[in-house]
Image (cartoon, rainbow, N blue to C red; front, side):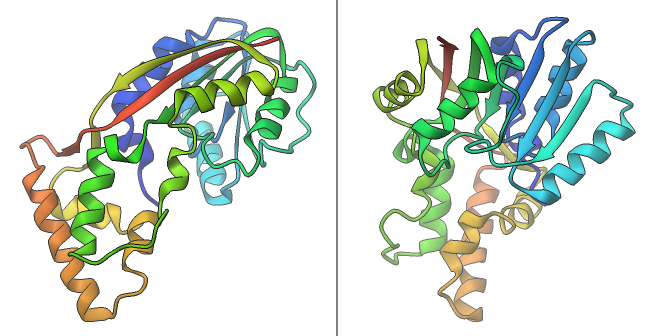
Length: 254
């Protein structure tokens, strides 16, 4: 399983600061993955609680195991689609998401459902990617794996569905949120302690699998060799890092 917590470690610090979880908050974490952000929220709300939801069963199972190992009691996880899950109306005082809201089929419907789970006036604090052409990791990895091939249009672009601030603000407003504030955040992404480790991690990503899906074994090996060379160029002696840009989006439920 790819280690998104390691990859997004710098962004996690930014999300925690912006979320500013209070002692008695009841936190909803959308797209929680293996639960790092949910566990952080639960620790910050000892008199409250945190619920993490994600569509991936393996990630939710791991999130539960890690929480049990760490002895966190005021936390729970559900394998659920936040677009349609019947959350308790007004059951949460704060919503958070670390890059977990860009893949909704109908974002207005999805955010409206999340909004109903928040009490009136509650904040939703989320990180979403800026456009793909502003992401060093996205551009460089695609180019290395393509090796001069023309890639299918739109491949991997679903991660950037909220990259336009006007679109993101419009979706949230239509879904019943107000006071939308969008701030640029720029942090590097971590892919591993060295080039070989980073390559072994990246081959688990859907993006990489999709980019070599139509290649035979020999062409795939050459593509992964190009990827290894790219990763070696980004090894700064303290791991392999790539530049990235995101939006911190904060809004309130009406």
